[in-house]
Image (cartoon, rainbow, N blue to C red):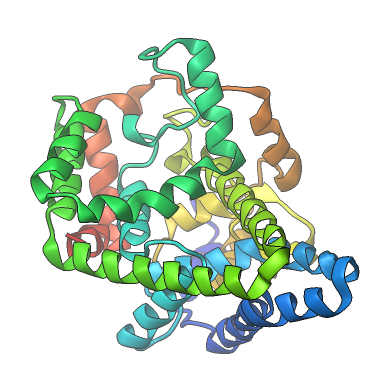
Length: 349
């Protein structure tokens, strides 16, 4: 039986509101970094040259914070007012050259169908030669995920029927979960409002980055290298919490240990299993849950060491009871009851 004090602590944490001061502070930090990247740094490079290349380091290190704020917006936890929450998340995504609607839909689908066959980038399913699949896996880790998100909005310029056929071909399978995943993706791909917003946001990103490249002048490689570093960090961090995770592990995700100084930078994403268990809570609430229930929230390994471990090669995805259609459906339904995922994903269709 649960310790009553721990149960009380968990109930109290669930009522924690958005920590607006913390979010505003991080928004100010990332806004400063955006201005530095697109305005101040190219000026400094022209004035002092190589001596200012070190600025690439903090810009790259703030990648998880930039993404973390977008992530909070996706879950409605960045700002209390819904319109401001979405506006801020969309503006941050444009500055990161990410398609906000697609990223939001994909992330909510990831919560609803964690480690289902379409959500296993670290697993070799045998459909392609192992050597070729290994190249694809390392390309995914070394920025391929980010590159794919950069070019994804291009499909919105194709006829809707073409895109829907492509989605249907990429998401085969006739079990209930696969059919549900395919139905939701097809609904998203065919939604004209979302397609229009993705085109608009993509063009805003293109204009912003084109102006930046022009402003950098001869120093444009500094911008490219910074974007590559940010893309690599995003790709590695996205794969990390689910790398080599068995299908019968709790919530198919892991928590990690990280030095305290990194926790606000990562916005507590090292507690990823807890985020999957409580997806509607703000990032600032997760440490309190971890402290209230040490056993269920134990960290599996060191964050950065585990990030490097991904480069050993493919992970595994051993079948267990959780892979049976009925168990998967029950697990999905349970997570949606807590997270409100059905409505959130539906909002993206």
